[in-house]
Structure formats: C-alpha cells, structure tokens
Image (cartoon, rainbow, N blue to C red; front, side, top):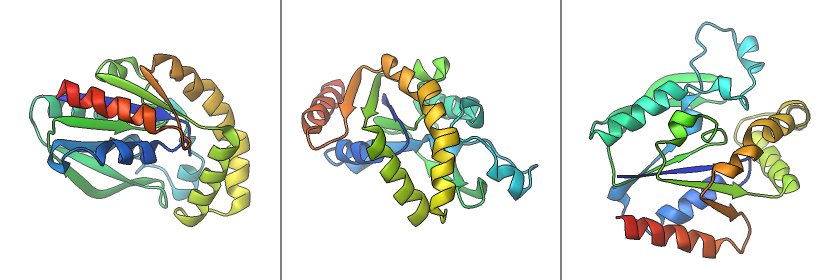
Length: 201
C-alpha cells in the first residue's frame, strides 16, 4: 500500500491535482480521503457557535481519527469515513464505507501539520498557487457551493484564512518531497508523481 499526502492552501487546486493523478490509475486500486471529512464533530455547539469555528487551525481537525483510519486501512480493514457538511458546520449522520486500496491519497490544507500523520505518508506533495488565484477560487467556491455571501467570504479570508495560511500551511511546504505549481506547466510534475506511483506498485 502506498499512502500519498497532498497539501496546499485553500483554493490551491489540490483536488484538480488529485484528479489528474488518479485519472491514469485503475479505479479499483486507489481511494481518496479528504481532511475536510475529519473536522471535529460539534454536536454540543449551536449553529451560531459553529459558524465561529476557525476551520483553518489544526485544532479543528480530528487527527486521531484520520491516523486510526489510515492504520486500519494499512491493516486491511474497511473504515467508515465521516461526511462533513459545510452548510451546517457539522458532521452528518452518513458515512462513506472505504475499502483498503493499493494507493490511498489523503488531501487537505493541514495534513502536514501533524507529525504522526505526516509519518504515515510515503510521498508528500505540496500544491503551490499564487495568493490572488487562491482567493478568487475560494470566493467562487464558497458562493456557488456553500451558499456564502461575498462579504462574508472576503472578511473570513482577511481575518482568518490569510493569517492561518501564513502560520500553519505555507511553512509545511518544507516537509514536501515534491512541490507542484498549480498552473498549466504542472503536467511534468504530475507525470513524475505518476511514474513514482507506478514504480512503487
């Protein structure tokens, strides 16, 4: 089993990179685990309290559960991956039954922040994108997919996302084995990653 960690700032294009990598792999040999599924359950909080959670701080992530799930997959066990709703800011009652695969890709902004989780990755990839580009993507996504209004997105970016990125995400680039620029020139980097995966398999 090969476990690949793909990190990068919000809106950096991690999902696009993941999709480009898995496009060339047999579907029954790869699964993707998203850090977003592992935000802490917040059942004890009201909706108004949940809205104030800083989702860009490592404290918001249930790292223990991600680590336990990856260890279970490595041991050949099936896991129940949680599903998180950004509309209600809480986990839903549903889960995704996830089976062990030859390649497991874990993606998320904060996955390199936890040493125990980092140590489980065979390959660590950081997707780098220009700050303005990331902001534009984040604004579009939050308005179109998460029902936010533009002022809410911009103030959240200024007050939370930008300082958290500088404090917790950008420095983890140093842990990466490969840094992929998220632009039209990233195909060479993605081809290298695919070659490494093929060789390992």
